[in-house]
Image (cartoon, rainbow, N blue to C red; front, side):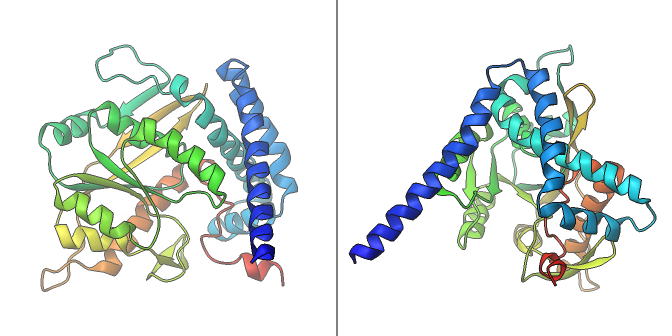
Length: 309
């Protein structure tokens, strides 16, 4: 028993130390103006990223997704993706300064929004609906935009493995993004309850999933989480695509698109596999448009293990 306690204490101490090492550099960024800090972290990530083990996975993913592109083009996309990863971390620190969108303002700021009539229609006619996005641009800004329009959206997110980092990230998100549901075994029931109450939910649909619906992404086989198709079938609610696009000059455009039409079988029931494929196709469309803004270091196609052979 004593040995077990010592092992747990040592593990907790290690996780606490790693959390502090992660947060201290980010806090130091706040000592500098936003634009120089954002540009610095972009360059720093482009320097460090290629030296990590994930760089090989990133390049392999890009070659598989874009066989028509040259090695120079692949490397350019990879470097932009590493820069975007660095920016994503720094944007946590500066989000309060970066997100300056106000529906009442006429003059554009750092953040512009496309699809304002949809936001207003959803606000003025409350009903259950689902919003989905992918790991492109700063996807964390989307629920902040929903809050700015007065929408009550419950967002599903995957907390970091480090509990100290998870607590910090959860507290940061909760203050700015409204209702949050950590991804775990019972999270689907929480989202279902929200929809049953006439509320809205938001989910990421391009995460790696070991057991799911057999689909394709960039022409390669993947498993897709059936959560959104199941919720859409159960509640027969509208499903809206949304994304964030990074613009030059540390600016952003948030887009809410019209509701997609759910694929149906001949008997009128929702086609679950076709719905999952529709989600993948939409994210693929976004990624092809701005390939450097997706997080290519994710093992979406489950090939990381094969690269070690």
